[in-house]
Image (cartoon, rainbow, N blue to C red; front, side, top):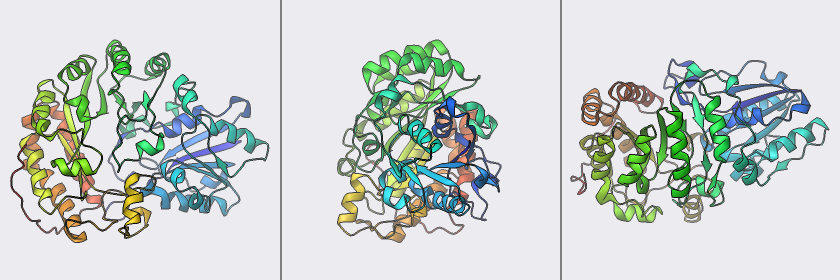
Length: 448
């Protein structure tokens, strides 16, 4: 049996090249494909190959496999369907999975022979055994929590091209999040649960990795104090630099930050999202204390921890002044890297249900559900103001003068920061046009 696993990626440069056709590296290697490969029952004697479209081109003869499995986020769904349709037209069986097929299974089944909803630790081996008997069913959904917690499989990292990623050592330590931000796909995907992986299996996974830094892919792994108290000593013993996401609750806690730094933390992805209390409350993120944003940035930089700050434009309550205020905050507080996105009501989220019920969805062209395009009717500004404001923010923050000023002010990881900023400056070319209008300027943020 020959199995081909594909992570669909629709990203293209402004000149039409696919992202994998550029010299840019992907940020990190996702564990989806490598874990699926490790979960293939050994008695099937299957040959397996993986294609991550962020760094790999899909081979011309990809339909020569007996079974093609494709994972897709919402913004990559149409690319996944294109690949699935091409394979099925040649008689190859196709399985679709990932966030989008989980929340839109009926749509996905129009392009696949089977859909796996949710996580695949239990469902994928069952599907493969049934496929080998010619009895594959159209829909699979199994309880995954026990299988993930026990961590029976170490991902098949040997199937990837490690030099194609800035960080190839990626790790899942837990799934789920204690918070319920209404625009986030994590709470519905995890059914509101926080499921830690067995520490023994995490340690075995770490020990199987080649030399190099580690990126934890979990949404918010270390906010749970009991789990953090167990995991941080393990990371400290491993003795490597690591990077992760963290909530503002964790990142603003001096005790947590010192423990994380002592265990090897060198960078955190933090969801600031907004500078306005009322906007955060409406998004289900009232636990972010905007009065502590500046203090938190100083504390993290003082510990030598770099900050990738995430901000969302167009949340209910935003107006056209949000762009210049946010850019000023990023610049003034020397955020090492900033990621700006347009609010996107993804299928499956509470935001999708609310915005759709109010008739504010403008398109279901999934290619545009990437955080770089406006797909709904905003309230406090026009569609064009929101779109142009995103362009403005990216252009201002990734000017060379801004990059140098922020890197010099942070001093957390100067050379790495500079390289990452130049990478983001290059990434702009996937969506920012040459001519961009300047948005309305707002006053300085009170907490900048």
